[in-house]
Length: 257
Image (cartoon, rainbow, N blue to C red; front, side, top):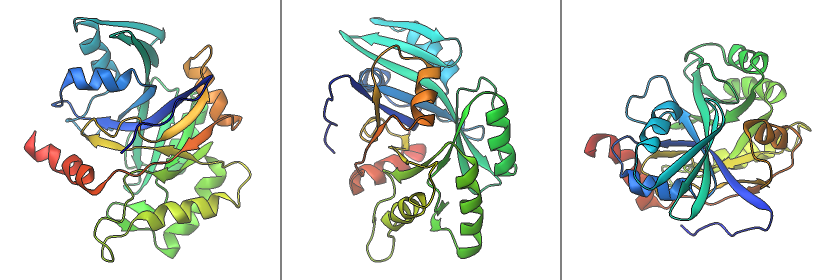
């Protein structure tokens, strides 16, 4: 995986990541100063960082200066001469299948509820709702019946994650998930409200953070600014798949520590 190019006046936001608690904090801090990283809490995972706990760890780490811009939602991280940002995001496993990424919400929403309710609650809280990896249901692709619900959700969310870096063709022709990204993009072309974002969807391991994402203007950054850029489609997608070895290491990590 290569480092995304620098773009004048732009910063890369990887809003869907799940860095593991047992990973090297020094390495994590280095990755966090490379752009904007969404620390995506999942209520059922106890082995990944959430925004609040990570803020606490960063504040006590030597050489790290943390300045919260939006309380409980968005902070600047300064380390080794570099500045990056972290944002509180949550991946809500609504109804066990459709995953909704919430941005700009201080409260956490429960899993296993109707995804339409999660989207409505997010909007009522002033946040942005993104449909993550629309065609991936666990380890399989969505079927025709589930695609009908995906189409309904496309009309409700602010955006959809139409490129997920983990959707690789792991063992062709038996495990091929790039098709999920292709279908998500194809469907997005039918909806004016969907431009489509990209994310690394990092699991546990840290190295994929910031390898995919969206470029947004790098000025007066705040959680409101990020939401504005998403709503106004003022962003550019950067897509890069993880390699097979990184994928294997990521999903082995929960058992190896």
